[in-house]
Length: 402
Image (cartoon, rainbow, N blue to C red; front, side, top):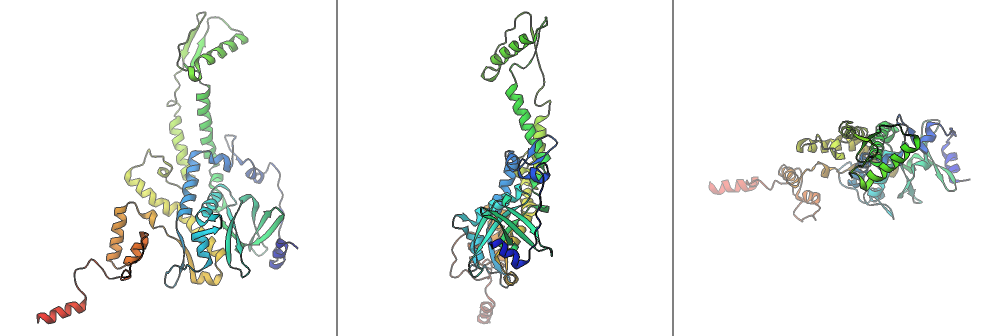
């Protein structure tokens, strides 16, 4: 009996095999991608060749990957470093993959694949999580038991295995549908614009226009004339002087990129792709409407609107797989987003100074935020900016004066 069969027997899983034809949407999603109105099929590979899509995917996944993630005690808010989950979330997922790299890879998988991003939890004999191994999206399928309990079917070189939901770390986009699927029409239109403009420059003989002849030419003569023209006035020879025979006349065409509004349409496609990924356009380097003030505000919106759902999803995915129900009641997983809220060194220093002055943070907590070692006297919450002495010192001064 295989491991998958043992799990199936132990948990009472009942699965249903589902087949679909090669022309079905499921098959197209696995291979060429979903068809669009432009006739183009958009999948992960073709979508990532669009610069705006590549920028949005990299921005979200790399930011999620590089943000510090810690395990905290609910009672005193202290960092729990001696739990195996802390190393997997904050240090390394396995011997060859850091925790940051794994989060980046799985978030990118979730942005590009409807199934989401998956990682297998490798446990010790005592059930403790030891490593996290990335699984390719096409090798994992989410299924449900008759009572609604989720489990996963994982395809391996030796067959398929069934895994309980506690053994698969799983993150998905909103609604379980990847942004490139929801926005495939906008992405396909961006690809179509690129292809059209590329054809325009590739096939354009210069000077561009039409040639008028006073006499009717047969098909062969037209072909020879066209071949001679493009060999003389295209590519590196563009812009040369045209010499026409037999009273032929050249008439230039006035169509320009500005007349066709290609530039504005391309910018609108960047904005449309930004909407699909819920990323501020300025963060995709579409700066036509960007100013110093609204760019700073959009950076804050990036955290609250774009990243927060992903960070919440990641926190629960880690807690579900790496913590037992009893440990989840005692500990919680949270990202540290302070760096995203800091716009400059001066603003950061001002914020730390205010927190220190209010007695909210100790000197060592400020130093930890600046990645500096603690000081022996740095755990006092007393306000260092006040000039008045302690109550005892003030009473002694009044007694001496009397």
